[in-house]
Image 1 (cartoon, one colour):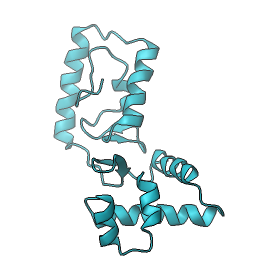
Image 2: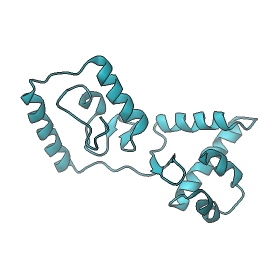
Image 3: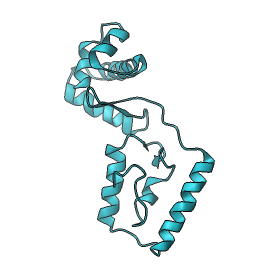
Image 4: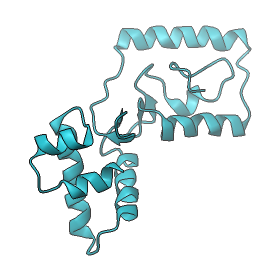
Length: 156
């Protein structure tokens, strides 16, 4: 697990640690190290499970975005850009037409929750700080409610 690797390589130069864990950028190693240092200053005993929960809580609080590192199957910090305002306007127009074709039929509450949970927990384009998808620009709370609307990358 990457958290253990970050802990194990905390005394190595960032470039060397980057190669060992397969991170694409030095900044990714430095971000994780900073998070680890914050955790260790607040907790007297080291516990990998607790640190993992701590890192997830920081992410969910919107302190950093995430991107998959295929080599280690973990999440790291990267900036997430939104589509241009023109593209978001096109997306809204297209979505309105799609919804009108189905008379704005809603999905069940369970389906809406399932969709929204996928966005929040399994999507690298989800922005926790404003509950938006950085791929299409939509607010996921609303996008997940209508039958005609779908994830722009096919997750639901």
